[in-house]
Amino acid sequence: MSSGKGKQTIITKDDELLLQNFSRNVTFKSSINFYMNALIVSVTPLWLFWKIHQMDPLEFGIIWIIMTLLSTWLVSFAYRNSKYVLKHKFAQKREDAVAREVLKSIPDDKKMPKKEKDERILWKKNEVAEFESTTFAIFYNNVLYIFLTILFSFYVLRSLNPNFNYMLSVGCSAGLLALFSTGTH
Amino acid sequence: SLTCKNAAKNINLYADINGKTMQVTKSEDNSKYQYQVSFSDENKNLPSGRYDLKFYDEDGYTNLRKAQRSGEGASSVASLFTITVSHPGVWKGPMVQTEFVAATVAILVWYLAYTARSKLQSS
Image 1 (cartoon, chains in turn cyan, brown):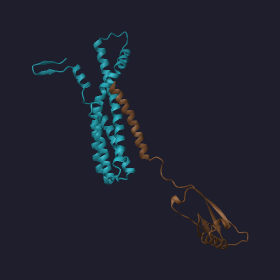
Image 2 (image 1 turned 90 degrees about the vertical axis):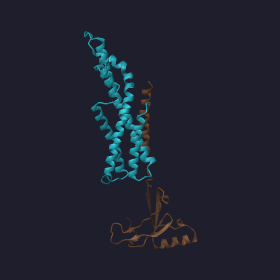
Image 3 (image 1 turned 180 degrees about the vertical axis):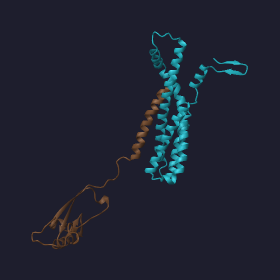
Image 4 (image 1 turned 180 degrees about the horizontal axis):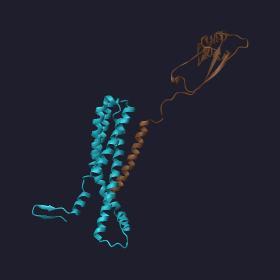
């Protein structure tokens, strides 16, 4: 455990692992994964507006780039928040199964101290929860983004000209996604 | 193509289409389709179905006009020949709008995802 000596606080490796497990921060690899997925989903409505609404890419290219970048940032923000909320739930749900699997993988003849076993279980549980929460956060937010974009562009804003339709539907969808992700439930 | 028993050629033909009478145009340049007639109307006045186009020569046309003036109707005058045209009708658009299908699928998939997330968060 951490110990305080005067004004200095020493954080042990265990504390670091615990902080990492419960932190909102994501690793660099995870961050890249989020941004790539967010970029792909933000680019998807462009096809709709190009082919169905007949928007010219050369004329509206700048607007498209700006809105795509904004949408990418907001969607990845939503991914991060959703993943943080879901990770703990996945960890709780998979706890028993992960523990069983880790204990089964340790050979019977190998004598391992309980602390090491617990560490392995914790590490594996963190890994599984990280993967499942990331995947589910991406899936859920993508589905919600596509649904909101279809709803705004086809129904709510259908009478607007394509340029404003695009800006508002993509902006509002990404904005609402970011807003909903900040909720705790 | 049609041929007359008395080998008559280059006769004037008249057509009675859907109650409207019109002269059939003759084209000497077009050897394949020498006689051509067309008719058009709003879609609601031409529903899908079979249309009988009755053709008359000069005498038949005169008798037809007499019958129409006296109120007897075109059926009392025998036509030279009849051609039946089958009109399949026009496409009035899809039964279900594509954006409705897209929105329905999107909402359904979102609902499944939302249910899964709610189950997870409540456990």
